[in-house]
Image (cartoon, rainbow, N blue to C red; front, side):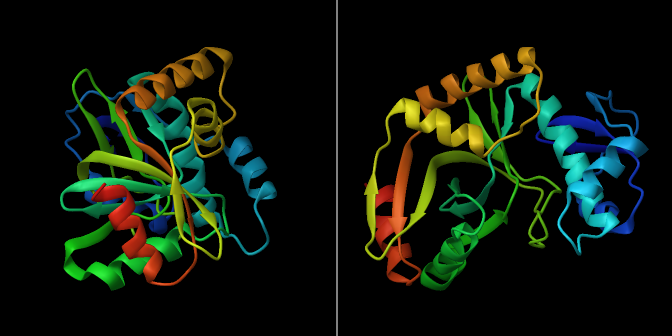
Length: 234
């Protein structure tokens, strides 16, 4: 079966219903030329499943397996995963990224309460950015990280926001070396040296054309209002 993800034709035959349902909205014609062919490797899948925490099912592991394969191979198409919650505000995508457990999803849900129908979440775990000569676009993917939010949509990138938890709300603009470090920990890993060089080149291009912020915030709805006024209205 073939799927169009970030305008990249991906060929893969899902083994479990869970991933098949997530990928269905991304289906494209079988006549399309395949860009990325993902083959199911039983041994690699088994090793991944062994590394997963207790309680993770085989169908959930398949989602992570295919997401990992796609995100590594998509780098050569100037496309990169940013582990984040993709919030759509007034027709632009704002990526809120953080280490697991910090509260990126909690924060973006505060925006839903604060701004209602003006905003929505496109993907709550694994959106991707694709760079072209004149555009920087955020795409939804079928990979939801268990959140249940994986829309097939695309919007121009507004900004990337790295979240830190704190008692007081504050925002700052990070230097380039900090941005690269933070991006590295929130993107695809276990790549070859050649792919890593491409990835760093993608980072450099992204930094040239994108606004980055570090947002320290609490878990009160005031954090959403503060972020809106500090990042979007600024």
